[in-house]
View 1 (cartoon, rainbow, N blue to C red):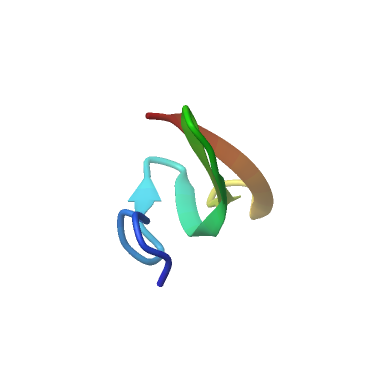
View 2: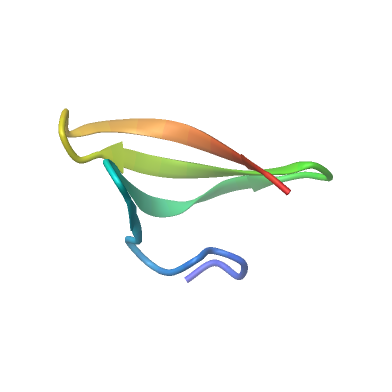
Length: 47
């Protein structure tokens, strides 16, 4: 598991976090799966 990732496969309403893609000075980008549509997306979380 990647350090800083909330927890493996954590679901936020309709999104399941798969892994961390990138980390920068102001944000973390995660690869997520939209549970309803079964699609892989990117989600940015501002820090």
